[in-house]
Length: 101
Image (cartoon, rainbow, N blue to C red; front, side, top):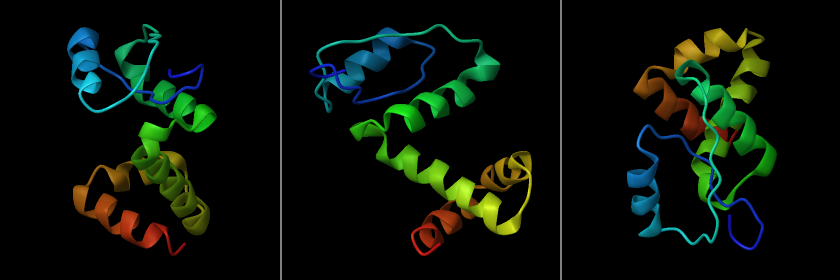
């Protein structure tokens, strides 16, 4: 957080190392953390990124928005879109066409 605004949401196994790395490139004055089961990390991270739309998570916001657009266009279940996005090429392809969708 910076001036009571959420500026970044992320996940890490080694929180101290991750924070020190972020100090090199991000401005923040408070840190909050939430312990989450490993299998729920991605879903919880997505929830908070979409809710707060932090300035340092723009890449992730674009990724989630693109996945939701692809899901609506192809009228498929989210787990099918998740399978598509496991492939780096498809993730890259959809990120390029995402702004045109």
